[in-house]
Length: 179
Ligand SMILES: *[C@@H]1O[C@H](CO)[C@@H](O)[C@H](O)[C@H]1NC(C)=O
Ligand SMILES: *[C@@H]1O[C@H](CO)[C@@H](O)[C@H](O)[C@H]1NC(C)=O
Image (cartoon, rainbow, N blue to C red; front, side, top):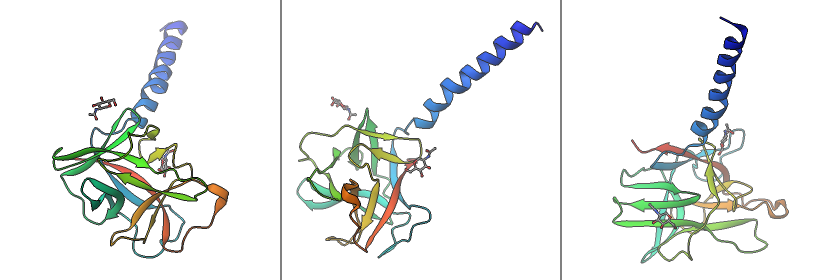
């Protein structure tokens, strides 16, 4: 082989590696569950927050907040529409509803609504292929024993590095493809 041919194939190989890989890594599955993973090296505080599935905890007709339970439901999943995160239940009988981080000023962490009534929808969600990120959750996610019978999920803003309540665990929200 001529050196130029070898070089060309090397360049092609590198090009296909650099173009194909990041796309594959960042691609979200069409439908996925969001499963909590207590951030490695951090204590799991309060009730167990490991391996729970995020869903819309019913708080009223068409109203819900992000909470998490040990049960996954085959009929309840998330998907990304561009950079909007949507949740749906029972094969679209309920939803799709947008997942919206509330934005109260001066709060260290904000609740997340998953409601028909969510004011519009919210852009800014993405994935690195493993975990969920949002521009509204610069400090990541926490799961806390709060007002409800299931742990509630909040978005951490990082405001003033306020200490978190002792029932809260820092979690990653891992994308698990729906089989
Ligand atoms: C995606 O978003 C667009 C624009 O908001 C909307 O018209 C469309 O219905 C959405 N599709 C799904 C599957 O959610
Ligand atoms: C992706 O994000 C998760 C947290 O959501 C993190 O644990 C993981 O290390 C990240 N992976 C890469 C390749 O950045």
